[in-house]
Amino acid sequence: MARTYMSVRLSYEAKYWLEVLQASIQEELDQQINDSDMENIELIIRDYLENKQDILSGVSITTIFKVSASSVIEKAYEQTKNYSAKQWENVLTSLQENVRNIPKDKAVGTLAPRLYLDEEVVSGLEKYQKEFMLKDMVRVARMSYVLKLVIYAYYLEIYK
Image (cartoon, rainbow, N blue to C red):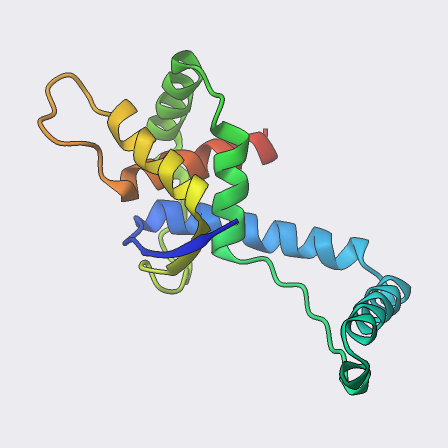
């Protein structure tokens, strides 16, 4: 699974939905993984390293699970990669109706995050650029627009 960096300037709305999703998933992750789970995970890592090479058994293990913008986008792509044209049409209609409901006073951090994505996801997003072209467009849809739709579609799935 090769990964690549991608820098895209997101719209405020896309970054807002991305932040909401990240916070929600991080909260769920924190609730699901308790202290005994962390001890077990760290023991598994320690055993793995020890089996690799004896000298590696002297490593101190500190494990932190963090939900990133990249991981949310990858999941959003996975959830939407089989959407039909009708489903995308519904997403676009919902987006147009609800984009005004986003609070404009929230701090969402940088609008140009540096994403670290699986190359298959990047290829799929690039394919969407062609699929999301309107009939009167000369060029493919911008990646920021594609990400906005994919993130919003995932947001709708989580918060229906």
